[in-house]
Image (cartoon, rainbow, N blue to C red):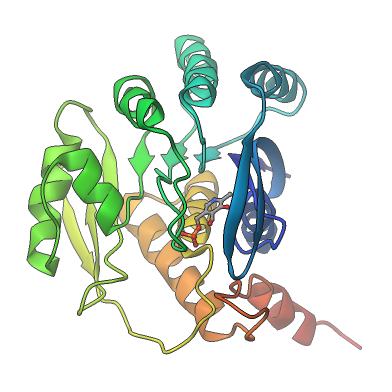
Length: 273
Ligand code: PLP
């Protein structure tokens, strides 16, 4: 069985963060391992507190995991602080210098949709300087794309210019920008080799959207681990998330989680009694 690693925060409500990522890996038939970067106190209603894990613990976790259960791909989510960004960047730099070419997807989590900062200012600087050169993919939402590219993103037509600006300086970086909050909620892919693809979005009226970005990046990483190329992986990841939103039951009192059990339910239905 192939394994995938998530390096992200812990959301006890399992809408976002490592527990959600592990469900996405399982839904793709992958064995998931995890390194928790921050504990959060949150429910579907919002994030109340964040507590970074000491960077020595993050370093030790990554080192020991890699020595024992080497992953075939890595997804990076919430990092919280500059010292955690540095710990993850050091680990990836070591991995790359050993010749390891496994896919690495970065979901540049800066703020929760409930409005809480999930990465400090020094962390954003370090993410640009140290982490971005080491990853293959980035999956920014509109705000993250505008912040990291320096190009304002208000309309669908702003996505290509902002994606190109973000790609500059990071040779071969694949940018999969999600337009979920746009009037036309289309996503845009600029591959590392310069190919462009649009993915038409469908507006679904639902409050089950907590952790959508986490799910997209984990589904993308899963498809890359399973051997898909850039465009098929992005297409399949988008399809996975759309179905997980469409089939979700409204849990909790706020923005509820997606339904990561849908592939399992389909499989169970086809199992003999
Ligand atoms: N990662 C973690 C660990 C989180 O706690 C959150 C939470 O809010 C997110 C990511 C971002 O998820 P969302 O954009 O759905 O708020």
